[in-house]
Length: 211
Image (cartoon, one colour):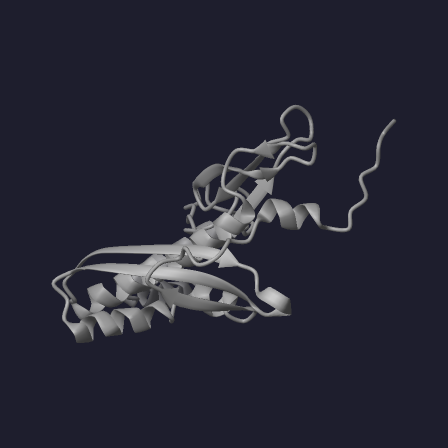
C-alpha cells in the first residue's frame, strides 16, 4: 500500500510544470535561513536640498564668531559670501548688508520672472536689467521698493507691456508687497535709500560697558 502511494506521488511530481518545481525548491532553500548574498536595493533620495544625514537644509544660513573681526558669513544655496554692516564695535564689516540683500532678492526675482515669460512666449528679449532700492515711508507711511527695469531686444510695444506685467508676478515681490509698496520707475535714484546702519543703531539695545 505504501509503495503504491509513493509511486503515485512521484508520478504527480513529474507532471508538475517546471516553474512550480523551481518555486518549491526556492521556498525550501529560503526556509533554511536568509540567503548568503542578499540583493541590496538602493533608494534614491528625492531631497534636493538636504544635509548628509538626509535632514532638510535651510535655504540660507548666517554665522560667525565674535572674536577677531567678527565677520558674519552667509550661505544661500551653494553660494557663500560675507555679510556687511555694523560689527557692533563701531566699525563696519565689508559685504552686502541685509537691506542690500533684500533689494537684490527682489531684483533677481523680477529679472527671472521676466526671463521666464520671454522664453515661454518666445519674445525676442536679448537682455534684462533690474535695479532696486529700499526706502522708508515718510510720516509713518508704508515703506517702498523703488524698481527700474530695462529690456533690450526687438520687442513690440505689446511684448514690452506683457513683460512689465510679468514683473509684478514675481513671488518675492508678492511677499514683500504685503508690507511695502513696489514702485516701478525709469530709475531708482528717488530720495535717499534706507540706511541699515542707522536703523540698527536705533534699536533699543543698551550698550553695556564691560569696565
